[in-house]
Amino acid sequence: MSFTLNDLPLRDDLRGRSPYGAPQLDVPVVLNTNENPHAPSPRLAKALAEAVADTALGLNRYPDRDAVHLREGLAAYLGHGLTADNVWAANGSNEILQQLLQAFGGPGRTAMGFEPSYSMHPIISRGTGTGWVAVPRDADFRIDVDAALAAIAEHRPSVIFLTSPNNPTGTALEIADIERIARAAPGVVVVDEAYAEFRREGRPSALSLLPDHPRLIVSRTMSKAFALAGARVGYLAAHPAVVDALQLVRLPYHLSAVTQVVAVTALDHADELLGAVDDLRTERDTLVGWLRAQGFSVADSDANFVLFGEFEDRTRVWQDLLDQQVLIRETGPPGWLRVTVGTAEEMAAFRTALLKATGR
Ligand SMILES: *Cc1c(COP(=O)(O)O)cnc(C)c1O
Image (cartoon, rainbow, N blue to C red; front, side, top):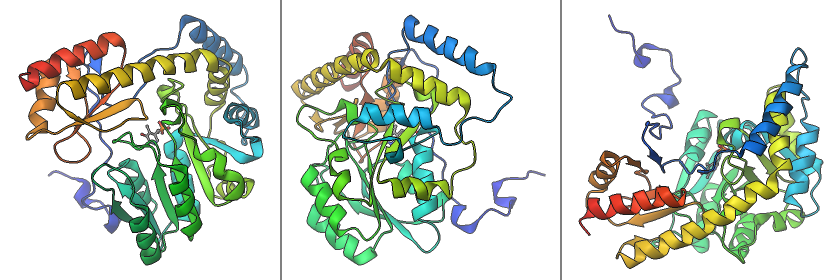
């Protein structure tokens, strides 16, 4: 007798749903989840190990529930006159988003996003019982602000997600567009800036809007630019009242002492880590130029990945690359594929495999 998920008293709104599931396959060239390809340097790894060893001596005690030291460090890193009161941290920005939906979404409320975008926004919304409204982006993956304002007027969302630079398209939003949406929003506006550090010159962050918009929230992560995906550290910047609201839903001691000290140590090495980001941005721009020269359609990218196409059978191209030991991501609009920017060697392997897969 086989007992399955369907036999459990699962919530009706979770029946038939699929979990988040980027494949985790053991291949030499992994370019599918927008990780930073650079492992911590020996210098940083040593500093991390020493900090964790120190912290280990106090693990009989609960961690600082308010993660004050870490929040001070994150505020200093962000600049813009922000202090620890403006900043909140959690186990990845996914937990930040979940806490935001627990506080500002929930049953009877609606969240809105502009798709294609990050698949976790609707998944976390549904997980917290929040309704989801998707508004399509236009053909070049921009948000049509007039259409956005009409959708906001119609649905009155409690939470609006703006991903900039957007995943999986790489598209950055104009500050003026964010501002127009923020002015029209009846609830909170979350600008997911997971890829902020990778944006091209002259593209401002929504952090500059915070002083004038107390219901605007900027979410960031150490998973991408700081090359710390394995440590699970995300954070937000907002009005201190938003941080107060999250205290009502966060679990006590949610951020372990080990996580906090690892994040603080990584912040101490920000210069080294952000230097590698510059290399990845250059590699990204080279990749965009190369793909275009081969005749592919390529979305402009302000992130550490590139969306390209268009393929009649993208699954075949994805599989052919995987057969050549290169893992990319089958995501985004039909016919498109997404590749994360890796090291120069990894990108060379990707280019060779793609040429072979597409017979160019
Ligand atoms: C990768 C990513 C995140 C980061 O999630 P973490 O939980 O911080 O690892 C958040 N938002 C978007 C749009 C992403 O692509």
